[in-house]
Image 1 (tube, helix red, strand yellow):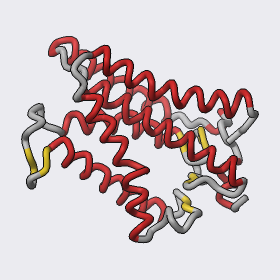
Image 2: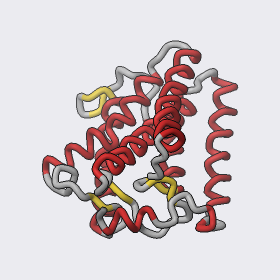
Image 3: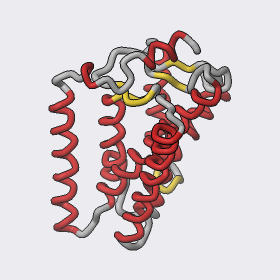
Length: 217
C-alpha cells in the first residue's frame, strides 16, 4: 500500500480523534436543514431539502466505491485524505468533507431559478449551475491536492487534462445532475423514493463490505 493509504488507515473511524468544533458544524447543518424544512412546510417546495440529501447520498456512494478500489487493488483508492481530521470515516472521506457535502446540494437548490427554462449564456440555468459548481469543486480539489491534503495515486486521476475531466464528471458533476433530476420529479413521493434508493445502495454496499466480507476501508 502507498504511504498515503497507510496514513489514511491510521485512526480510521477512531472516535478518540473527535474535536469539539464538530459540534457547532453539526448544529449549523441542523439549522440549515430545519430552516429549509420550515420554508418547505409553508411553500410546499421541498426541493432544497431533497437536493441536499441527494448530493450527500451521491457522495456516500462515491466514497463507498472508492474504498472498494482500495480493497481490490490493495494499493490505493482513487483518492485518499490522509491529513489531520476530527474523524476519518473512510480512506477518502472525513467529517469535514461530509458536512460540506451535506449542505452543498442546498446551496445549489437556492442558486437555481424556479424557472427551469431560464438560460444563462445560452445554457438552461439548472445545468449551468451544475456545471459551474462542479468546476468550482474541481478547482478546490486541485488546491487540496497541491497542498497534500487530498492524494491522487493513479495517472488517469490526476492534474492532467484527461484526469481533470474524469474528476469533473465522476467526482462532482453527476452529484448535481442527480440533484436536478430529483428536483424535477413531479411528486414528493417520487423524490423521497429516489433519494432513499441512493442511501440504500450505499448502505447495502457497506454492509456487504464491512459486515460480510470484513473489509475495514
